[in-house]
Image (cartoon, rainbow, N blue to C red):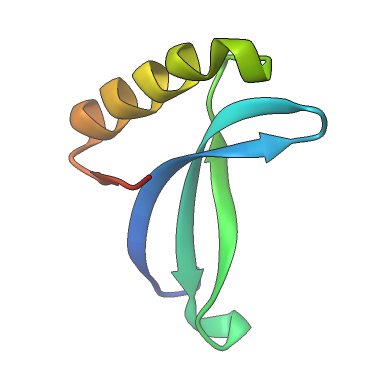
Length: 68
């Protein structure tokens, strides 16, 4: 398994919807960022606050930083 660092959870556009996304930087990719996992919900732009709530709760549960 590749070494990783800088784990964080954010809200990003995934297709045409918003989603909570776990991101990290990977050594085998010259420390570039890739998606580790996506959250369960998909939200419209009007539902952004729901996406943020999911991301913040996920980050807290995993002990990972939430970033805007």
